[in-house]
Length: 174
Image (cartoon, rainbow, N blue to C red):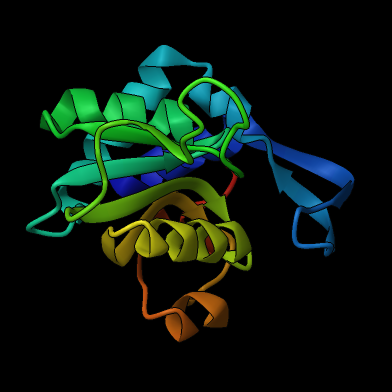
């Protein structure tokens, strides 16, 4: 499917207007409710199929961030055969007490997977924690980058962002 058409479909499915507070603390009048496209199995499959060529060569593990990155990374893993890790916002204090569940990240080249990026704050936090646990991380992959360019916090953290869709793709159907 053509990227412009995919962007229109994601926009039609997930775009909301109103007043919304983002995780970054910013407020916006436009919001992409990622759960709407993530809950549509056909659309999620098409989105993740289009993301496969964006995965950096040498990636050994795809690491999806809680919570929206989990369905994306799971579907992406199905398309690539790459193992997946599910990264919590903080390690749970019981059971395995792990920050990342699923595939082992220590000593492996990991690509972070997120759904929607505004400032990249959670990507930076999770990347720093996974790096401290021995993962090698230089890249992040997202469905939607709300910005025309990579947010500064990601660049400052030494990350390259690979976005499937940017504002230019998210144009309503006419």
